[in-house]
Length: 350
Image (tube, rainbow, N blue to C red; front, side, top):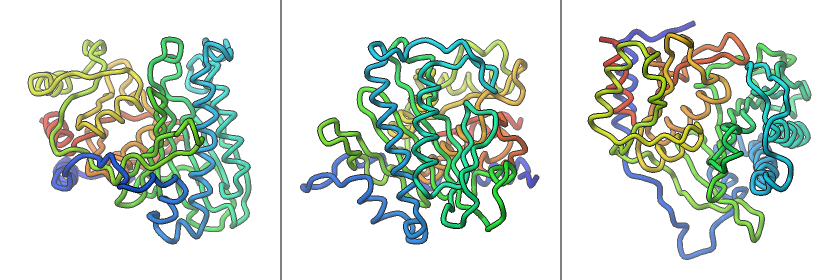
C-alpha cells in the first residue's frame, strides 16, 4: 500500500484547504427546477454519461424513493424495530435495513449497467454480470442510522460508484479499489425533506424529492463547503476511550466551535457540508481501526467532501488513498472543512 508521510499528508490537506470558498447556491433561477436526470445529463463527464452513469444514479434514486416511502410510514408499515438477526458487522439488523437492502439491490441489479454490488448488510458481494455493457461497480450502505428510525431522527443512504477498470471477470477483489478511483458518489438524506446529493469530478449538486411529482429536482447548485467552519461533530460520550492526542485535538475544537452531533453519519455530514464543519469518528482503545466502513461510508463521503473543497483523513493519511484489503474494512474518519481537518491531523502527529 502506498502511504503518504506525515508531512506529505499535511501538504495534501493544506492544498485542499485553499480550494474552499462559499456555500451552496440554493435557488434554480427564474425557471422551474431541472430534474436529476436533466442535470446529470448536462453536467456529468461525457464519457460517464455515454456509459450509463445516469442509469446507475437513476436506479439509486428509484431505491431512495422506496426507502423514503417506507421511512415516512415506518410506524404504520411495520418498519420499526429489528428482525432479530445479526449482520456481518455483528450488528442487529433493523427491519428498515432489510427493506432498504432489498430496494437498492433490486434497483441496481435490474438497471442494466451494474456488474457487481457490495452492501453493508450482506457478507458477500452480489455479482450481476461480467458483460462489458455492465461497466459499473457500486458499494453502499442502504440505511445509515437505521436504529434512529424508531424516534424519527434523520437517516440516510450512501453509495460509492466505480467504473470497471478492464474486461476481466468481476470478483470480490475487483471491488477493493481505493476511493480516489471513484467516478462518482451519492448520498441520500431522509429528514424533514429527502435530499439526494451527487458528486462527480469537480462538482457536487443536491436534489430534493418533490412529493407532488415524485421527481428529484435540482435544489442545491454546485455545492461548496463554506470557507468558515461552524461546528464540530463527534460522540463526546466516547472521550474516555480516545487516545491522548485525540483528546487534545477535540479540546481545541471545543474551544473554537459549537458541538452539533445527531449520531447519524449522513445527517451530521450533510449539515457540515452545507454549513461548514468537521465530523470525527476516530479509532480508540476499544476500536483501534475505527468503527465506520471504508468502502461504502468513508470513501463516498470523502469523495463528496473533496469535490466540494473539503478533505478527509484517517488521521494519518488521506482516506481516498487507502487501499482496501477487506470488503467490510473499517477506518477512522475525519472529514469536513479542509483547514480544520489539517489542524486536527497536525495535532495528532505531535
